Length: 606
Image 1 (cartoon, rainbow, N blue to C red):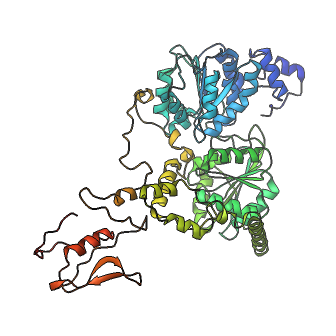
Image 2 (image 1 turned 90 degrees about the vertical axis):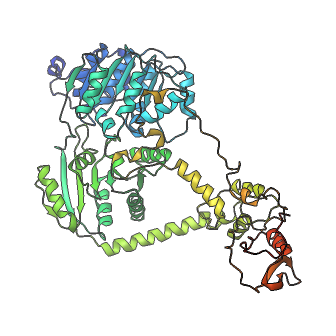
Image 3 (image 1 turned 45 degrees about the vertical axis):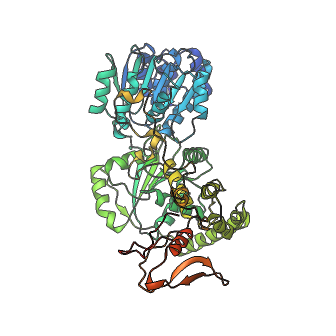
């Protein structure tokens, strides 16, 4: 965070009440020294307005646009007043709508907490419980959490909120948009009744007012700036671009502008554009709903550290990701709504800096672009497609793509087919291996080495079904159109009463299936009272359809002849004898349908 511009007259600044120092606001000296070591010398407007009331222990309701310095506005007073915690009983809680924002808050407050010998822990979904449980059991004092994962930990009995004396709800309007308000209410009901409650929001709508009326006592309201990001320092450009020129124009803009965030409408489109920009020589990182949390963290870290020139993202990055120093925002796929355009564009020109916003418009989108310009009072003309040698650009991109493919083949070509499981043919045989015990065979195939990306060998029907079941259990359920696409099952809002946070929920009944999760063991089990014949040689083979045999047709006995084929015999009167029926049963093939008249011998079960 860069400090605001200093006054040219030092004396005037010292006597000015509009630009006080952090010490003037009542911030303790050790925290002021920590801020100065990190290059933060003067408070922003929202910080100067809210810090004195928050330090005094009052409930605060602040409205300020994204990127205005809200983290220190609520973080400094909380760290200054926070008491040490006991294991699983934190004393401070900050609720965040997104994982990225929760992690950024933790990073910003961590140096301040260490100055006071306190520990800050971020709690969010998409990652394992290990480090989070370790922090809670060690007695971390301040928890920065997303609602979904926090509910999970409460239900597991790993965290208790009765000692929480200070609560912050950050981006309350965003919580409402994502459907988290019912869960937020349940969480606040579990905190100490004498807590201090601070809320920050970009807008103060009806949903935020509900939280204020229920959980705040005589709150002091501070309003700073507009309800939307300030785009006055942004230059807006609208460029004509068809499908063949959009990638080249994007690469050209990023090369000229510097660190850029490129917005796409879909996750698949984001991945494709990232590959195309990489082939054009642009270092890229990708963030969207199908990426794991570790991948998203790595992508954001790569971009903030300058290792990636462009961050390609869906609308998940429009709100909830705070990165300073973004020079340009490219709307590769123009947003459908005015609000989406504003929040996307608000990723640049932060903290008083300037920025550029470029929208690529095809022929079918020109009408909507003019409507958007009218709503935002933008008078920019639609620029013609820039003079770029697109054929040479595409040819060079294809060469780079081929080189990248060849390098990848040299590094890891053929390894996946020969790794542990052997080649594709061996994998196929392994799925159809003979076994005396069908259950043991199916369990063995499940516990084998999973197929890798380079392994194209077909799997047996049952193993692919088990794989689909395990994949669907861990796959995030998300959307493309809004930032809430990033909500995985552990963070999906729970629309239930506060009873969802209590332990004692009913356990699932154990499955009736066999322990290995495969259905073939049941089909191989002989029926009671019948003679158990030899096992089927093919574990996953489908049963043949039963067909009616015409009178006089030949019936198989199940005994192989010298040539290896089953022998046949013609029964008297075209009827199959009982012995033949038994042989058919032993061979694993279905019995022929019952006939109206038996051949004089009753059919026995063996």
